[in-house]
Length: 91
Image (cartoon, rainbow, N blue to C red; front, side):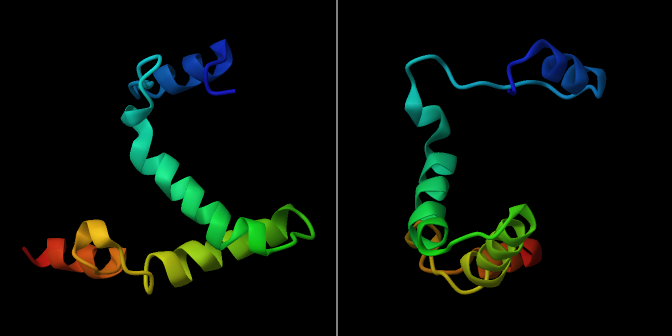
């Protein structure tokens, strides 16, 4: 659990700053919640995973092979995340 004492101590020992959403404010995490919903609908629920390594492979293929490189996103002017990142790099 990311709120455990051990986790907090490990993160803080590496000089990272912990950040949590405000209690009762789901909009703090809206982007990642949206991504998780899409990931479940377009990948997780459509596959049967044999084991942990199989799940890692399928999820990697979905995220790196489809979501970032082929799936257009309306929030970034109907570009793929890869196209948008490349555009930002040259700007």
